[in-house]
Image (cartoon, rainbow, N blue to C red):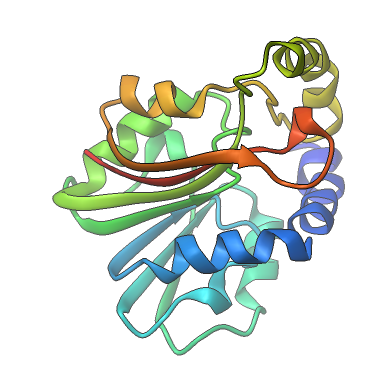
Length: 202
C-alpha cells in the first residue's frame, strides 16, 4: 500500500469515526453481538471497548498493517481478541465458523464489496447474523444527485469511500435476508450522513 493508504487515510478515518455522534450506533450494533464474532474492517480498534461478556471471542479482520498495530494497543473489554491481517474479499476462516459478523462504516470502502458480502455469507453459521451500521445511498433524489457527483472525488480523498452505495440491496443481492433495518440522516451534510442500521441473516 502507498503512503496515503497506510498512514494518512487511517488518521483521517480515526478522526471522523471518533465522532461522539457515532457512539450510540456503536453501542447498539456491537452491544447485540454474542458468541464468536468476526469484525470486518476493525481498523484501529475503535469498536473493541464496546464488546460485552456475551461475546466469547472477537476476530478483528483488517487489511492495513498499520491500523492493526494501532488496534493491538487499544484497551478493550475482557474479551479475547485475535487480529487477522486480511481482506474481506478473501476471509481466511472456515465455512460456517462464526456466530456474528459486525460491520461499522466499512462497506463503503471495500473495493469489491459484492465479493466481500459473499464471503461473509460463507463464514456465518446458518443461525448467525450480520449486525451493521453503514452510510450510503439516500432515498432523496436531490441528495442522491449530490452523492453520485461527489463520489468520484470523495473516493480519491477519503481512502476509497463511496457515498452512494445502496446498502440494503447490496446485502440482499449478496445473499442476506434483512430482518431489521432502520434508516435516516444523522446530523451533518446529507450526502455523507444517510445511515443504514440493522441486522441480516445468510
